[in-house]
Length: 294
Image (cartoon, rainbow, N blue to C red; front, side, top):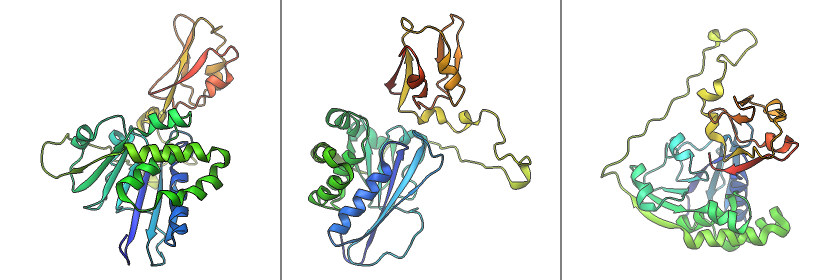
């Protein structure tokens, strides 16, 4: 880092993926190097699977006074590959900045999605996390990609923050971080060449005089309007050989998106299901299994 500069980072993730923890660990590692650092989250719907933001500011030698959210980041990190097509993750990213994405796609393939003067770094963090941690939680894994692409902190500086945060599990998290560091692929994105055209739906909230008295939710079924079915990282699958058609899953579903089919078995509506897994937890016969993917 150059003296007198402040690097701003924006983390895009989903509730439960650990974006906030990533930001905290980054700040702690930076402070152990004698730098000034901030880490703070920005929540919308506070539930597992919902898009969340977290931010860092890191300065080599200058106290950081600003406390607002990061709108023009130097670095953008995307923990969930599905967010690339759902929201404009590069909004405000400064020229010369870095975009770091968890994806199964190659750098050459993914860079066709973007147009700008940035570095693109890609790593299949989900595969690494599943193999080394046993879960698809990629926060510590993506720290390795961050270090590889930017060098904003040193790998060794994460040792103590990881130990304090994860205790006995810190070793596997550090291994995942190191593995991502080695496997992160990088390339330059340019402003030239064919790019896929993308459009993002702008959120239009009702005016105060358009709200009903005592009611801030104006549309029934607005989970579809806000694409909340896309929040899930897992979806339920039914084993009809075990299912006794009791319907307890539909009773406990917080979105009321599980309904009885014509054959008497139950299924969820993918446009509304957020993948919370409550149906699988409440199923008496264990006929429901949560499976990765939407």
